[in-house]
Image 1 (cartoon, helix red, strand yellow):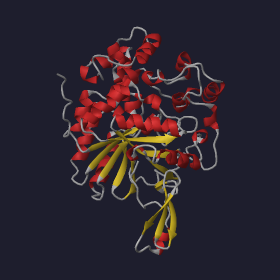
Image 2 (cartoon, one colour):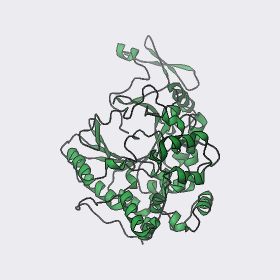
Image 3 (cartoon, one colour):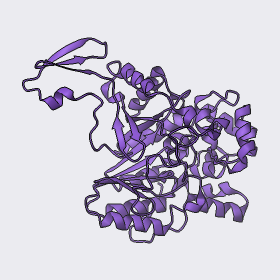
Image 4 (spheres, helix red, strand yellow):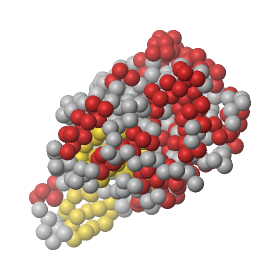
Amino acid sequence: MEKESPLVEDREPPGHGIVSALKNVAAHTGHPCIASRRTSSLVFNKSANFSTKSWQFCREFFPGTSKEEWNDWRWQVAHAITSFHELHRFLNLSSGEREIFLMNGDHFPLQITPYYLGLIDPDDCRDPLRRCVIPTIQEAARRPGESEDPLHEEHDSPVPGLVHRYPDRVLFLVTDFCSTYCRYCTRSRLVGKEHHGQSSRERWQMAIDYIERTPRIRDVLISGGDPLTLDDDRLSWLLARLRRIPHVEIIRIGTKVPVVLPQRITPSLVRLIRRHHPVWMSIHFTHPAEITKEAKEACTRLADAGIPLLSQTVLLKGVNDNTEVLRRLFHELVKLRVRPYYLYQCDPIVGSGHFRTSVTTGLDIIAGLRGYTSGFAVPLYVIDAPGGGGKIPIMPSYQQGYEGHDLVLKNHEGKTYRYHDEEPSPKRESATQTDSPRESPLR
């Protein structure tokens, strides 16, 4: 039987995260994957029961690697592809992909786990997963409305690493590291920039102190970077420390790890999270091609532990801007007990213009889902308003207005129906389906 992760509520937070720990191991041993041999609790599935495609990729590009090593999350992080020189071994790069590296060199942030790289078509630069993680020359273009921090998170940050925009909830950025970097990331100004040091003790303690002295905060969303790239000790300390605050009712974890690093969802990690319930998890899924055998096992393990799972998807041109693609994704997710929660209009981050669709495209997709699939499989389409306005829901216009006391409604087939409203007020008569509440859930 695997040992439980140690309870660390009363200790100081451990001094090193996964990134620095792996670097130290590599520096002193010359073999970064030796970290995976410390304990079997780090292994995702000791029977190495994973997809044939994944194992074929491993044998081709990482010969001599055992199944246990490949299935170990620390091995995956230690062997992540981070440079043009490495990437060239795996993919036939297009002229646009080569050009961005010639312009920026290896200083352009890049990180992809071997597992996720194995899902990408090596010869097709239009492959949807490839577009999400491989830089192209289009990122060098800056379009109107784009900025480094379009959501004004820095403006709403009372202490470093904490965003307090809504009255009763905060966003806690606990690390600037992700195992795989998305090219359209809202926080591209932070991730991969090690000098920010967001996982330092001092930053964590400042944020925790602020939460403790602000009793209206009932909901803490842990994000980053990706908090599940922290090792078990640091994550356990963090969850336990937040759980000790009486007014914190809900803890949420925002992550893409079950998608790009499913090996991280080990039995010991699941037990660790379960100890601190209620904990919810928001997972960033993008495309049906991400629903692999490994991702299914990771989500099943989390759901079986009673962890409510939500998905957040960014609408991306050339990736998933198609009703049928998103319907397939959402159907696969609900089969895994992952509730499609948000469909985001792509944020206006510098260099992301080639990813953004029109808002009309998003509305057409929602209209193509509503009424044609289960209601709980249809996410809320939102724009996170530039300037710090928060998430504003955008919906097709089903409410056509009043005729006398009758509210005229249009259904998914375009047919109109009437609902007799006894006392329609002028305010209701002028309301539209796109009206948004003053507050909406924090990402």
